[in-house]
Length: 358
DNA sequence: CGCATTTGACCGGA
DNA sequence: TCCGGTCAAATGCG
Image (tube, rainbow, N blue to C red; front, side, top):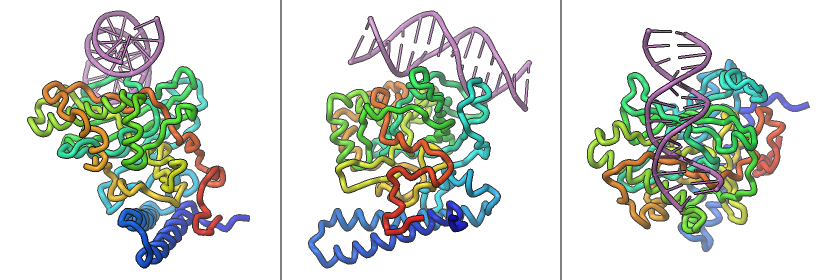
């Protein structure tokens, strides 16, 4: 029998262990010949581990068991978020799940839903998570009562081909136009490993990917987002009022993904499934995202793409942000479609990272 | 030509 | 009836 650890507890332990391990490595590295980058990476991971652990504690404390550890657990407590930033994820408690239903309306109602916030740094460019690893197709845009910016609706590109009913809504924040609230609905059931879209986990990766012709589309889109955003912010918000920026970028998923062949493995932070989050504990938050719930567009990444070519490309016209990765689909994340049951998550999951396994 | 976005119409819940 | 969400024809783009 399994100890009665709750998912949160497991995750918490895992995070703490992870942090400890990283700290140990760092100690070793400090005395060895390690690059500043390596050390920085370790520090980031340590910090993220502890941040997640703290979040878990906070979350557990505030929600108590009410949420039901099992089921909700996946919900994010935003592993991503850190530093107590405003809750970035909100979960709609309705997590009933099961998108097996054929009835679409019913399906929609029962789909799990959670919200994330992505912050775009207009000064430097795009944010990291241009894509969440999934391929989205915009199917609508609506002006929302009381909201300054229109809301954009996206659905999985593979809805028809793979019966994947995941959708997301992107709403630009009224208060802070640099923040986009992205509400995800439903789990991805699509399987697009073949696309082998590399995950964007690190700047380098982005760079590589973006430099490939194959990624032109995305690059372009990213740039548009940036430019549009910049234009809006730098010039006048009014400009964007109707042009909205639906940043398709999404995030969470983006991050996770293990870069194969790379020493960095960024596990899912929270992915797409809400549930998940914690699920995976262990691991690592990509440094770039470690600081908060928001995803910031970091200069580094920017340099990798947007910046490179014309960031300024359409400062005057603000085409809508497009889906960050239409053509590329998805990701590595496939497996992340996990279910709530931790036990099922195992596929490659590094719970044992620290020699700890439940 | 195929696929994605745009956008007004339509649907359904509150 | 209002409003959020989705559909689908028109249009654009590579």
